[in-house]
Figure 1 (cartoon, rainbow, N blue to C red):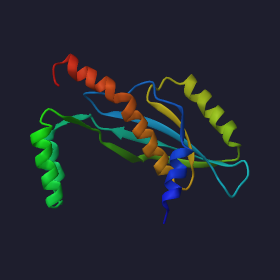
Figure 2 (cartoon, one colour):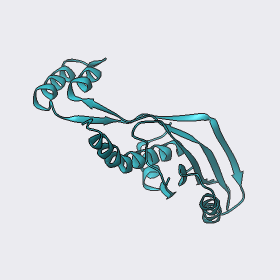
Figure 3 (tube, helix red, strand yellow):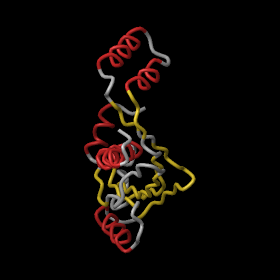
Figure 4 (tube, rainbow, N blue to C red):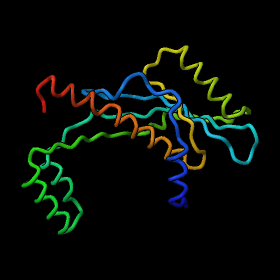
Length: 174
């Protein structure tokens, strides 16, 4: 069982070395191909390289009314009161909803006898020579590597939201 400090450590020590060139598609599904490199703590100059695909569903706009219906499922009176407040006070508010799925079908991992910086540099060069606009290289923490992927997805949402909203506005959808 992991503790809060494990998650905080992972969040603080995760960095995106190579970000995808493309943002999350506004009207389609986006598949990011990640390479996550983490040091093995019990072996010197040894890293684990995990590769796989993270799928980002098409972002959706949720109105306050729809959000309140989703909010009420399985919650009590306080949630119902909050939902009613949202509907009456924030009727024009819109909430972006992004959905991500980690696809284990494309998942692989391998142990490499190489210092962390060398592995990151080598993979970064490989990605630069390639032509995949959805490729990412992430330096992370081995034990809680999935938290590192969550941080990556959060950064992709932050990076993409402005572009997605601008596209919806251009098409008159907001």
